[in-house]
Image 1 (cartoon, rainbow, N blue to C red):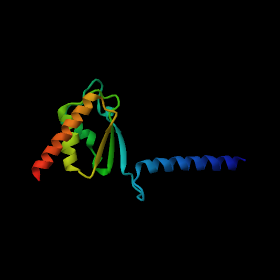
Image 2 (image 1 turned 135 degrees about the horizontal axis):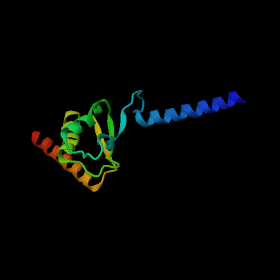
Image 3 (image 1 turned 180 degrees about the horizontal axis):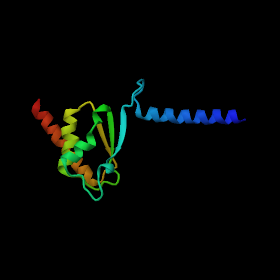
Length: 127
């Protein structure tokens, strides 16, 4: 009886681990290709995300992933320099990394859109 319970628990644990791996790995590859980053963790108490240095700290090692999901939950606003560093400068340096922002307030969304628009402007003028 105990052996059956242990086998069931092991099967459940293995299935859970497999689903986590499937969520963060590319099909047919055995590497973690995706990460989810809670942007609020980049904020210190009462601090706003406004500087390029804050953005550089946030984006450290993003290039190791194919997809980076940026969760902006509980982030009310970001500064222009922060958005530009993440969504234009980083993206130009690492075009193979897909940045996917989620849960943005209208203010954050506007800054992200502005930075991405400047990225497109620079890309089209370089051609």
